[in-house]
Image (cartoon, rainbow, N blue to C red; front, side, top):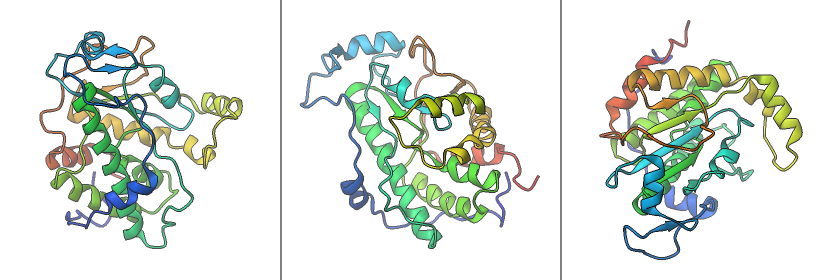
Length: 265
């Protein structure tokens, strides 16, 4: 992919992660409340050993799984049907940067992504298998918005700049596996109409993001075959790939960017 305006250099931006997540820390489901023996750790009453057996993961493997799809795809429902701890999706506060200062907005959303990534890494040290309700590397959202003409490419460029810096310092990384499900727009519409329990912002816009979201994860798949599964498995998660050797490798991010379609086409 050739980013409009040319290649952007990474830079270091002072992290406001602690300040941001003191205010917006989501509740993580099923975190053990005390330190436990490595092999006897229990999540929702199920031992760590049993969890690993059910996934097919080796005892020394720690797997972070991103669960991704458009709004109303069923990410949250599927995650909470499983038996592993979940890093929740970001909950809007109505105080997010409005975009009048693109640099501030990019720094804010990168801090959100870094915070969710740190939660996943912290949880895997306890449960060794972690689900993320939406990908902590949510750079794809700015890509998708720009791809459908709903945001300028400068938004993606700013967020990419911050993401590169976060990868370079090891503050952000790529999940070991992505489960991606993109239902047809009419299915999303029906689910939205039937669900009165959740407020879904800009749902009409989000319905249009399926095609570019598929482009993004096809690029991820081309870079690392076997690490994208195009469904939310009905029987849970078994036989997942082993962890990535280097989740925060800047070259990995660059290879994904290169594999994306040229946005000028």
